[in-house]
Image 1 (cartoon, rainbow, N blue to C red):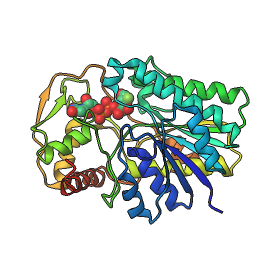
Image 2 (cartoon, helix red, strand yellow):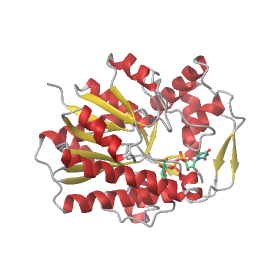
Image 3 (tube, protein in one colour):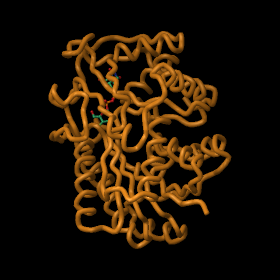
Length: 345
Ligand code: UFG
């Protein structure tokens, strides 16, 4: 019988790609999502790619009673992957309580409900934001690098969430956890049936870039060229979203089928740092499309440079990022073109 997994936030960007990979790997997926930052049509995209429509429950996971009912109506869920969270850094500075309420209540509800329904493990979406700006000797950054004070309420919720999971497991919770610290997820499924769908003006680099390339935005602002990096622009580790999604399937397999540690943390990145300017040029070469851009001042709160040492995930999970940056950027472009064809943007 197929193992059943709850994907909390499964219609979102990373959640939808992970649902596809879980279904491809033979899992049955139950999605709970309140659609506050995603769209019901994502289910059509998932079905087109995999031939299977996941079970979908529209529900706010802050509603514990509602979540309990949903789980009771879908018995036999063995593991949960928690994506559902508010994730806009800038908004979190303006509306901190929204972030603390959404991101912390949701986790607590799920952790409290897991034993009631005999769930064996939770994969949690964390972020390289927990490392802040690593000291030079800690680049590329490993899981052992110190956690730095968060620069935003959003980042703080990720740190607090990790601590809540640690404390809960430490208190002999009857389940395991794998915490995945993502670097910068980008790109879309190669079918262009699913991808990133930002609400309003995008805050992240790739959706802003592809919207500029297609003419929705006039020009891309490059936030600073006076950083201590080879070309002066910030450096990140851009990881293909399908590669990232596959790591979740491996993590879930590991928790459900092996005698691994009760709590493990993995960096998910490529191990390669890429500057904003390099990324723009790689996009232009890969797609043949020009990106009008202008250098502007630094964005408050930006980290100068961070990229992963993914050796632990490579070795322990047997997972390595596969897609090239050029192909990943092409997938983001194909998705943007598909959105235009669909009249969405
Ligand atoms: N950038 C631009 N112009 C833009 C948007 C971004 O130059 O219009 C630059 C940023 O300055 C940064 C890089 O592109 O150097 C990447 O920026 P993103 O906003 O795409 O991503 P961040 O690295 O800032 O954000 C990521 C995650 C968050 C996390 C944050 C912590 O998206 O979840 O890292 O630093 F909290």
